[in-house]
Length: 138
Image (cartoon, rainbow, N blue to C red; front, top):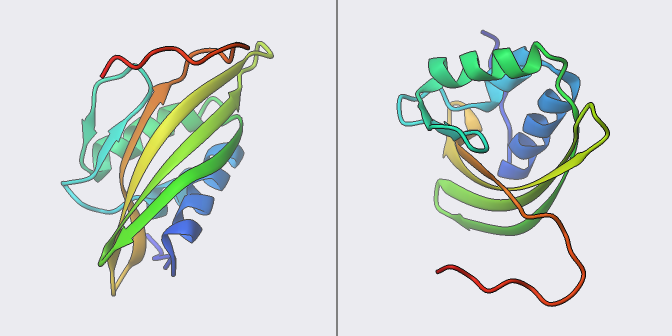
């Protein structure tokens, strides 16, 4: 597999969303850290551990054609060789319905491979409703 270096976590994040939108499995493979410690939690799904299991799951998702997804980074935190991003995702489903998710991404930096996605955890957000926000459960 050809190695792609991402100089920043933001570059790796942009590549992740571009790969999803264009159903580009080869780029998706390169975005992820080739580590047994990599974790991916798709919305409403069990965690997947390790590069091979994660890539297999994305192969199934991307085989359906990807999808139109937009994202907005809500917060960033970097310390040493780790970066954490909180992202709001908006995915337009084939039925014309928009799904909103919150994703937490953890990126790890290695001098030999650049910044790679180590953890992706996405959870559905409730539908946007006018009025006051709902109380927090925690």
